[in-house]
Image 1 (cartoon, helix red, strand yellow):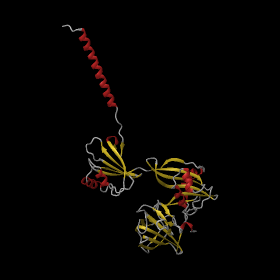
Image 2: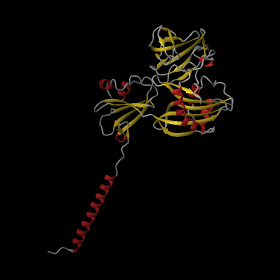
Image 3: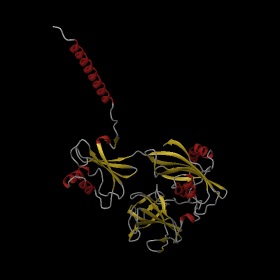
Image 4: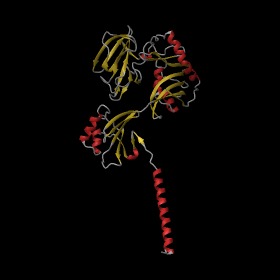
Amino acid sequence: MRIPLFSLLMSLFCLFSCSDDSKNKSIEADAAAVVEIEPDIRYGFDYNQYTVKELKIKRGDTFGAILERNGIDYPQVYEVLQKIKGKVNVRKLQLGKPYTLLFSKNDSIASPKAFIYHPDNLGYSVIQLRDSIYGEQVNKPIRSVELQATGVIQSSLYETMQNSGYNVNLTYFLSDVYAWTIDFTRLDKGDRFKVIYTEKFVDDSISVGIDKIKAAYFEHRGKGLYAYEFETDSIKGIVDYFDENAKNLRRAFLKSPVKFSRISSRYNLKRRIAYYGRVKPHKGTDYAAPVGTPIMATANGRIEKASYTKGNGNYVKVKHNATYSTQYLHMKRRKVKVGQYVKQGDVIGWVGMTGNTSGPHVCYRFWKNGRQVDPFKQKLPEAKPISKELKKQFFAHIEPISNELECLSFENEKSTTLAMN
């Protein structure tokens, strides 16, 4: 049987055409298989799989109200709260703080699958609301970086720090180090400083505060004052600052009754309080610190009072000798009793908010000859010198730090040393 030429040509055309079409489809399929969406993992979830809502806590918002507003009924809210109990605390959401809701793109259910709360830069809370409910508090890793700061005073230390781009809180740390030797309210133009310190960061860029000052040099009215950090009591964790000759910069009393704190209000007989609309003297020095922070006796002595009053809250008074006494107010709880002998650095209570106070701190009051005075303006006896053995350790400790300090110039430029602790 003979096939017409026209039919043969058409058959061959269709054969090659189909072959090319299937080949193109195969290439397209292969290309589609190669193109894959890179996972966008955040907080343990692939954000590509979710519709993301970024919101902030509004006045009156509660965890339950937020979930109910987004399609989760109260019985399920109660179930979530029971399963995350003791793991994540969402009972007190802070006004203005951000939170995230994740809605699954591949789910017909309109309610969110996860709730992520960001109360601060240090961490976040993750709650999975469906498909195996769980809650987790995640703390971000903190990196401690060694930094250097130098400057020349033009008006004030604070403005110099600010204009040079440093963390302005370094001002308060420096004033604490030199609290017994320099009056930072009376600096002169031309005074200058060098500081080696460590600052804490999360996410490699967000500062969460100054950690400590390792060494400093402050030139005030032509006189240079060195300060080197050194631990004198490893058991109690007492850290002091010494000059280049191992002489303690503080006096016989610790400069602060709490570690890792800042002065939030100084002794000031002319302090004006807006709330009262009048001058109300403040005869103590306030050290802000979290509730539960241990409060230490600043010098050896005997407990003279350990009681509670409406204004002071829980408080302790220590008599050190015939001249000096100290008092510690607003404690959460006292640890000592009247008549008990305590040594410098012993814990006598914990920071709280009892009595008349608007925030957690200890009000430290200093008495001289029965009168309350500013401890930083008294000519107090010097601290007991360190032992010969400790002095050897001190000089060995400061040698490399001293060399680093000497190499710094007084330029108003910020320099950093990427040295991790």
